[in-house]
Image 1 (cartoon, rainbow, N blue to C red):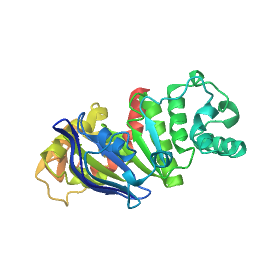
Image 2 (cartoon, one colour; image 1 turned 180 degrees about the horizontal axis):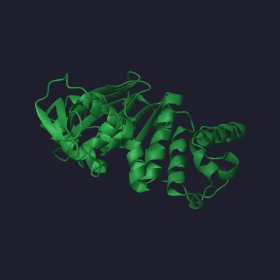
Image 3 (tube, rainbow, N blue to C red; image 1 turned 120 degrees about the horizontal axis):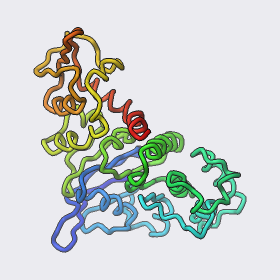
Image 4 (cartoon, helix red, strand yellow; image 1 turned 30 degrees about the horizontal axis):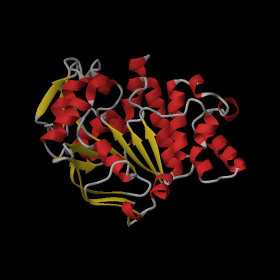
Length: 323
């Protein structure tokens, strides 16, 4: 649905996006991730022409974005920011219906759409539609920001680090909401984050960027099991395990994330009472690691175990660390 063909963006003589070529499939949840200055937000904003590319081509449904009427293009692309940008002088309903009103929807259709969307994110329409924005919590405001982007039923949703300012519990809940919405509505979502945990939790595919270039594109499992180069490997090591600092390898054993088997060969070993962080670092270079324990049978951990553990635990561990 969205295709980049040799896209460049220069500011003066500096390339902030360079030789960027990939295709984002219709209905896909696609994540752009990388360190600060990697070009991910610039790439996102080029899709709806908030930033204009310097060279190359971006196509939506095989049509150049420059050939679309700009208003038509942006009406068909929802946009969610970290700063939310709700209008404080408007009610929740008035904020949600800004674009439908511009598109001259009937009052009845707008009212029904607000009801539908508020229900979808677990907010009682009768309770919330006439509330002022100042009366909402940060998480509630961000929910309104998400469904406002969906209000006019666009095909594409762009999300630029929308949850990074929230507390861990609100962030975790909103991640779940967005995944459920995307599965239900089948929108094409392009999501920017610097958090690998979030990328794993949300993305059908992930694009790792560095200094404006693509380092690797793949599923979370593909990237975790087969990092393309040293940059991706180091980014995984520094970006994944922060919430695991207090856990040990024994935690994985106790919760059946590691199979008690000695059949698989290994070239490295780790003690069961070692931090999970140490295991993550070790597995960047070894596909199988033996876990040793003084009082129990040795067992093996593979990258498949690790992927399963990270995907299953990211939300649970965030909520536990915040409580």
